[in-house]
Amino acid sequence: MKKILVIGSAGQIGSELISELRTRYGKNNVVASDISVGRLKDLYDDGPLEVIDVTNKQHIGNVVIKYKIDTIYNLAAILSAVGEQSPMLAWNIGIGGLLNCLEVAKEVKCAVFTPSSIGAFGGGTPLDFTPQDTIMRPQTIYGISKVTGELLSDYYYKKYGVDTRSVRFPGIISNMTLPGGGTTDYAVEIYYDAVTQKSFTCPLRPGTFLDMMYMPDAINAAIDLMEADPAKLKHRNAFNVTSMSFDPEMIAAEIRKHIPDFAMNYEIEPVKQGIAEGWPNSMDDSAAREEWGWNPKWNLQTMTVDMLKMIREKYAKGLI
Ligand code: AKB
Image (cartoon, rainbow, N blue to C red):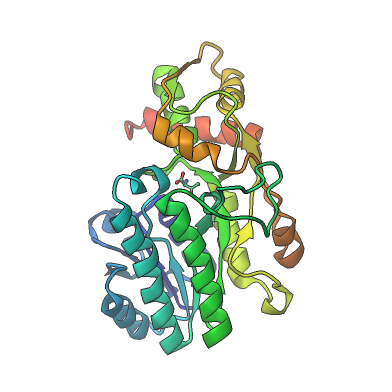
């Protein structure tokens, strides 16, 4: 049985990944960790919890040894828009944290999953049907740290045999934990505002197409890649994965099928707009499909039905 550590468990992805990992591998085999344990206690009182600051290698090493961990999901990160306000913090968490995980993994021989992002593209990347292997000269600290993370992860695999694997996540849409500080966050916030106010003020211009994915597909991507037969992986860090591409007008139109008087306004946020314009409009994820069977289940239509249902339920229970 696997012994898994998730670093950054209280975030948007971590909070849903832990539940799925515990269902698949058993509660006591999945250690949830974050920089403080407060929020974690509310989320997961059903299994082990630890405090880990990813910038502290000792913290990671102690927990890995204590639980005999064989796989680390390293989710600690500062997202793209907020990273531009604190570049050093974004770098220290993204790259300092990753190096700590890789060093511990090298010592104890465990596997490491660290998400990359569509943010790794930019600076000459072809933006339509962006290939798996292409130009990557991003202009944000987030993107620079994602490209560096991919290279470091491949380096530790080739030089030390550390089993590193990664996907380039698009914007992830979910209804349990809000994202914070990302360029694609609007595609989550729009559903909450649609339910609570029947209107949304969008920070990105109409016509700004970005890849997106519903959380259940994102969770499957991470776990399926870590379960994949290593002999079949020609790539490792990192695979393009996507399940839909839309612009603000398309998601608004989809919401109007369920809330006909939903109103969309625009107040463009220049930092987010600038970042979004450097990212793919849509990615080619055929390498992930061929090498480890990536096959997303959700699209804009089915996701919209589910998001509105789940958020309405939260609203009815007074949770938002
Ligand atoms: C962000 O917008 O920063 C993230 C991402 C696409 O990596 N959601």
